[in-house]
Length: 310
Length: 158
Image (cartoon, rainbow over all chains, first blue to last red; front, side, top):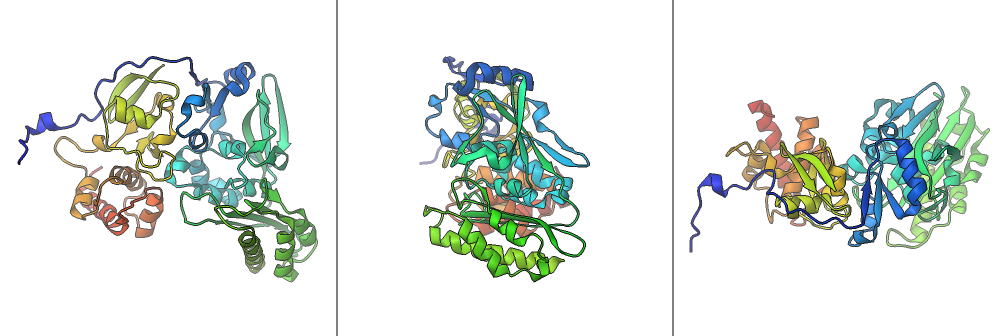
């Protein structure tokens, strides 16, 4: 049976929707302050009762199908101060709600912090990078958070502000366990401060996952090596994600590398030291053995590649 | 609470609940059903709409976060009876199988073509990596985006 077709104009769907019915508002609240000061007031008053949200790309998944459990939201997206990127002679200061997309596309960040820019460009997919923020990635504190190994390697510090007070701590002291960190209920992570790497800095970032996009990493690696004019290693930091309860730096790798000539380093030895420093688990994204093998291989390749760059 | 936003060029004021998702506002309250709910967890891209010029998975955005935002959905692409070149190209290339993922694919492709008017196949793959097609008709989707780019360059449109 053929359906009667209506004239095109009436048939056509409206482009901006029908009038919605007014919905009753429950006791839950949505707070979207325009100033940091106001946000800190709310934080002091409500603490963990108001769930802090920025891009929402992690928290909305956590609360999938049980959004009703959230009593109130404290949305940080209207605070302009948190969206700034500042670069001075010594430091690069990134506001907490700067999105992955902005970091990935920022020319100067690509130049100064290539590992961070690359990691940001590999978070989720475009839709996630549009919304997800660097501060959110840190505060979620997943051991697999893509930007975290690079931030450790760059020796980043985070600024935790509360009403009338602030503390600046090394990012490695921020994480205390899987999805656990030292942020207090009245604090907001406002900025990330990264010392500008010197010109003689080499770095390698790698992410391993089961597919290219929209994947929680099986493993991430960020290695930074600073050499002097003779090619002698001044500082080295080898950092990994998803191989321990928190993103970690393997100090023994740095201790081994420092004061050696990069060209003379035995990459296999570095790989062995890296593997002995991690404590991976078996999970859906990879086995412990797999993670040890991949850590070993990626580390060796990174050291070889960096040595060939000199 | 009340939010003001623009959707497909029209300014609107809506009452939303704090725990309401943007996807539900668009589909249930506004009746714009092009954006689909696939996974509800930001993994599949079926609910992709454009918010302030960038593609977002609307299942991960709270409706209240759309206050002052500019939203574009597939329903806002055509001008009168003329489909957007992307829509034409998806038809012409036979890029639509079951169709569930297509509104999301088209919105992401729309953003891509705004940024890059003649993307390579690899650039299209990267841009559309967040849109999953379970009919796995990716080749023709990529063909369609390339065809749209070509037609738009020839027509000097958008």
